View 1 (tube, rainbow, N blue to C red):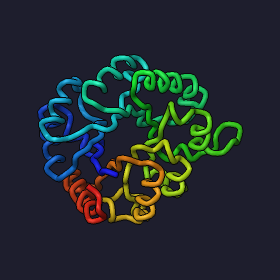
View 2: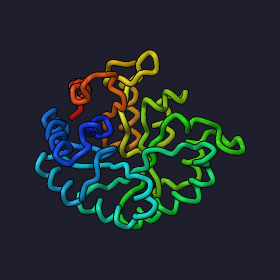
View 3: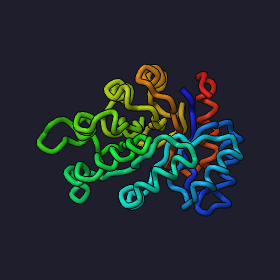
Length: 249
């Protein structure tokens, strides 16, 4: 398994193309070889390809804004071919009175199927709301998503922090979703429900690593949405050093 950096961590440093390019270089200088692009300013696919190549990086996952994902699906697929990224992700779905279960099922399975036909793989990223009971009391939402959408059509970017925040066990959910978790998010959980640098919180990452490998995970991406006032680049650096000491690169 290879480690990488989720750019949502450094989104505030990527709000124009010059800063985005600089941040790609700074992340590469830490030692990361793979990235997820999410939360940045808009970019052209060819520009991203050139910047990735320049810094020796590979993009292995994106989170695409919903209007593009639903309204420009074919162009999104084409863009991912340009910069060589296999996984196209949805970063958030609220599962509330507006973003309902029925609305999700009427929209995203068809998009996921089209993405698969286009040679890419649709990835759903969980938060804690997926640990609510599904409509009709048929298990929790995350479980029902896995049951009703085939593995060959949709994978899961399992997020360790949000699983724990929802009352779940990250390693147990990796076991449940084995075979459809090629990319996961590593995010530590500290006292007070704080997001922490990997190894500075309380998640049992030794077990996560062991189970993730058995589940077929290829990439483990460091994400820290909230760095609690610290420099996000420094947080990514400390997480990298921890993971490197665990034998990952």
